Image (cartoon, rainbow, N blue to C red; front, side, top):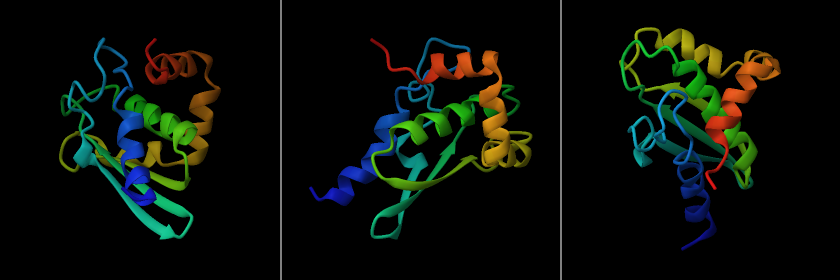
Length: 131
């Protein structure tokens, strides 16, 4: 197994343990994220584009933006290689997917969200590895 194959599986391994903000389950257990929702493209020899397409459990999920934020924060912290991240809601699976996609891919909005102590605490609870 080459280095590239190891790196390609890393995003899936990282996000599978993120917990849902409302339920005691992981996003993988709820099928919000699956192995097929992760794409890794080589930009150049030492940088990759990682694209995640997640599927909320219901089309009007009020926590879809928070889930996207959790995915972004966990991947930014844990990916072992230089990367660019794009995170989207799977097409046609949420009533406001376009607005949410803009929010979770806007660096300033993400930074502002993480400055909110209540929101940061929820994200930390979702992304922290279980003991």
